Length: 494
Image (cartoon, rainbow, N blue to C red):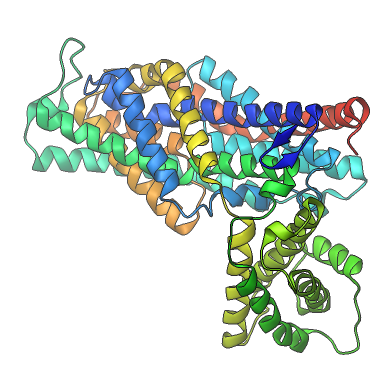
């Protein structure tokens, strides 16, 4: 069977369909949660009909995804165990992908079913940590070698900070608007029988648009990174590298230009072959290994491998499928190593640092690309998920957080804060949850208006937030073990 110009077996097609289906289902459930938050106010206040709101939010999510840099998509990939990423297409790498998606889907679906807003990003990170633990235990590695604790710290920081930001800023914005905009209809509970005044309606549609666009530019990318990784694993000939790129010659030139810089940092008299370089760079990229200039001989050797592979080539299409996958791994190792050295402040000469960072960017252009159809598929899945599952979350946001129903001003204030916070987080690379900011923002506006809060709902939401990381970590570890057993024994993929 021919697929994307590559000859594949029926079992490969089935594996592709299953894994892509899981990735898109995860994005659909992401729509249940995060995108449902974006449309909650316009639907609940009858500013837009549900179908129109969902379609409009889906378009804004798509625009956010298409106009984004795509860098956020690979923040997920960067958290995965490095030895599984560099052996993508092996049995353990398939088990990694399946278990991450299955774990996040189970938790997200469960919290959605009971109507609790939940962070899909945190569920995904918890699942990744669980896979890292499972992989380390099954491989006989120490946990501190493969477990990346930084995402845990980031998640807990966001868990503490983002609700406070949402609560305080949304409450403050509502109080400020009451002082400046003296229009009583803005602060009355939404009328279930009629749409709000035109100017209020326009404001709510604008805030919905902002949150949806910001969500697409940040959260919508996370599934894209996993979906692209699936395509690389199953169809390396078509997706391991950007085969339509015309940058082979510039890439070769860049690899040649950095060779003297790497040789200068490398210790004299140290000789490293390609396999040794692969092993050393893989170990270096493990989370708790500190950056040092001792890795430069291996980095220089791996860069020479890239130079040799590119020499005489005019395009990536001239490589065989296996060679494309191998070249991608080489480029990924070199790019990630340069990035870690830069973060570790090992690069001391400004000009040499600029040269190496430029090379890293060139490598990333060819390996960390997102096919346009992947972006469209993810945005479509988000929209479909929102259309199917919006009601449970919308009712929670509109009726169950405060003791009174949501007013127009409360919804607008919470969404303005959410859009601004997500955009700022996107700019600074901070892991802030749409769900956390918006839900706590609604709570803040209810408090500011004196309507009071429903303690039972807030307790359940807080529990779901707190339990997401440990629950998904346990699910990830268990599902990785089960998936690995099934793939190795039933499918025979080593």
